[in-house]
Length: 267
Image 1 (tube, helix red, strand yellow):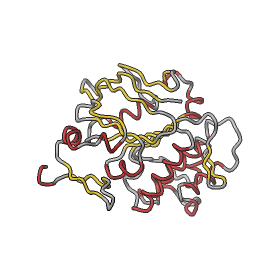
Image 2 (cartoon, rainbow, N blue to C red):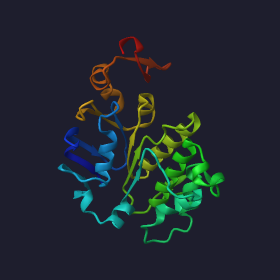
Image 3 (cartoon, rainbow, N blue to C red):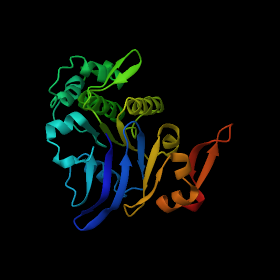
Image 4 (tube, rainbow, N blue to C red):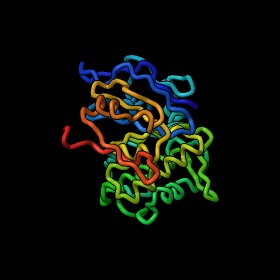
């Protein structure tokens, strides 16, 4: 089931944030959304999740406006991971993850345990969420989304509930140590291979090259500057347009671009 942004525009108190965004997020792909601070990346994800109204254009899932899908049905089809997974009460980690099951109408007794294991936080299940580090809290928030979509692992294969279609993740690795960055992005890759459309906001372009199937680049005015497969899309000209600086290409032993590094001298 494909998630689409069609001519999406948005403004906060008259200040434009997104300008006529057209983008498609097919099932079975991991798509990165990149752009400078204030480009509207988080706003785009919230529009795609139906969390804020779409004053111009539309966000559709399987051809249906996301906002028109009843909330309980939407929760079974689409999960959203915010930048900051704040919890107002002193819930334990297991209880936070179990909140992802709130809208589910099907029994999945192992969903919470499976989600804790996949996000590598089983050992903190009985701890208070508030005492965890920022990175650990990010992993718990990921686990909650996995539980929401009924993600399970059996024999090394990931499955989700048949209704599950989309995972939207806003900077889910920003506070993680290197090993958990790699583990989390590999997990998101596997979810895409299991048939979900996975959309992730990231700032590290090297991670986009390494893990993502597609990229949507927003410029500072919230317009789509480029989209497609990462390596042919993230050209020096496009990156200069998007970020206002030049980038150096670091290549591996085979000559393949392995990293994109901003040129400090041009900043």
